[in-house]
Image (cartoon, rainbow, N blue to C red):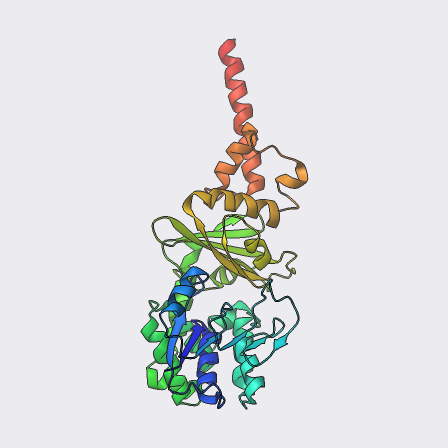
Length: 354
């Protein structure tokens, strides 16, 4: 039996459905076993999954990390080892300039699904016209996307969606009707998004949300509530000893991102992650959460941060300011408040001596 390994997001699922229904004679995956994987299942985790597949059975990996075990690998995420130029051969189709893996598959197999692929491109590159579109659109693929935001992640669910999409020749409207998914999913994510206002904290040009679980709030909720925030940061519990961190740029805030988010995460020695120019994610150990926020401050709040002003992090005023930031106080206000507290203490001390 052949196998399809795919990223468990909209692009990965549509890619798997398109590939399953249009694979070539050399790679016939129409009756394949399908394996959804999430963003944290990289490196050794992916290797363990692939090691369970008998060596004589073929493997396709779509919209996910490269592995030598793949008989065919198709992806659009930038890979340091491969660089920025497209690569195409019998076992690899790599194009970091493509907006989605579904786009690559559509071109490779001459699939006439222009509107579908354009919508996948929009979703995977987050090039929505505005945040309101995310929480109100009635496009079938946006309804499916909304559904995925609120359900508990299950391998069986992702696999079932791919199978139905493939069965319906990627007619998403027909597929979601078979699956019993409707516009109520969009209404649900909008209601949940509005609740983030109680938990989101401003952190310079960033917002920070601590989640008890991944996807506690729908993606882009911060931009729906805080239209001028430039970067949204989420820190989620991911087991007893580690956190899952996410960073995304708000393309609707009116300012371009000057930082390669994926590269920033890849360069953190204590983080296992990466991503695109404007969005990325990774895993850190619990003890590195404070250091992660410090690095975010130094890089994303650079114009106002410690690096420009040469602030000594061991300075008493600065230490107190950093403590206040973690409670939700803006870094500017935190430093003012910290300075004020120190001055008040000095005044109290002087009065006591009198």
